[in-house]
Amino acid sequence: MENEDARTRSRAPHVATVAVADSLFCLVLSHEKPTDLVVFGLPEDDQTILHHPWKLSRGDCLVKSLRGRGLHDVADIGVNDMFYTKMIKSFTDGKIYAADIFFPEEGMMKEGIVCVNDIGKLPENELDGVIMMDVLEHVENDRQFLNAVVDKLKNNGTIFITVPAHPFLFSTFDTRAGHFRRYSRKQLLALLKQNDHIEIEKCHYFYTSLFLALLLSKLKKEKTDRTERQWKYPEKSTITRIARWVLNVDFWISKTLYKAGIHLPGLSLTAICRKKIQK
Image (tube, rainbow, N blue to C red; front, side, top):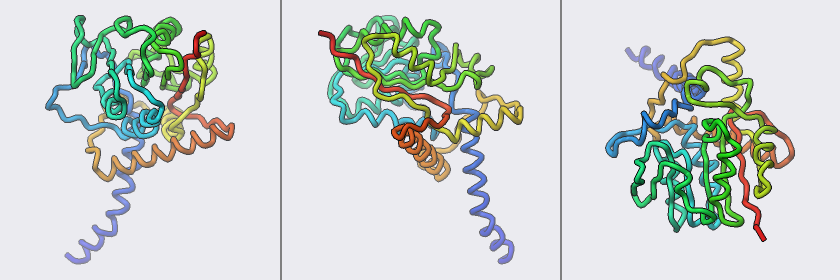
């Protein structure tokens, strides 16, 4: 019995390592879920949501980077479960808006957040910041939509964007998720530059590890259904913590190399821009 216990203990680190590696690969299969928000809407108030490390890391590396920018009135467009909206609310002192198609026509208030179902209902030239986390790929006319969003910003306001990267990775999953496209860095820059009021601060890929994992699965022609794989570990579990840490380090490396003029490929793209001061 003691020998068996010893063998079990000796296998434990290996089992944990395999579990983490498998879970990280599952991020590629499940980090993006179908976004037919008319169907999904907001979760119930008492519903437990197990957030992906991918989602948690994006909050760590992207949304929290907006701290210190002096943002007061901010809109989150395409909010899904309002995870990032509530994060923004924790470090801004103005009015917070959430815009998504599943909110009622008359609008609503939720936890002090003004919720509307159309960006046309957001105030004009009044917002200090707008965030769009994986939104533009869902809009057929992304140019018109982006220009309408920029009109909501006051002078020197910040617009924060993420989109899925690399058109050659477009798959049936993207079609099911309602994506019209994936973007190259060149394509996203072209979209931003067509608006004369936008000044681009940065634009780079991130999550190289997930890009490589997805690329490997495509090269092996593995048939996977990313819509059926859901994250099953709590936020404080060891596997979630390690996966989140790995993605945070991945993001930091891409960001650091970008500053040095080196562009690593990644599963996603991010851009931070400002609205030019209009004289």
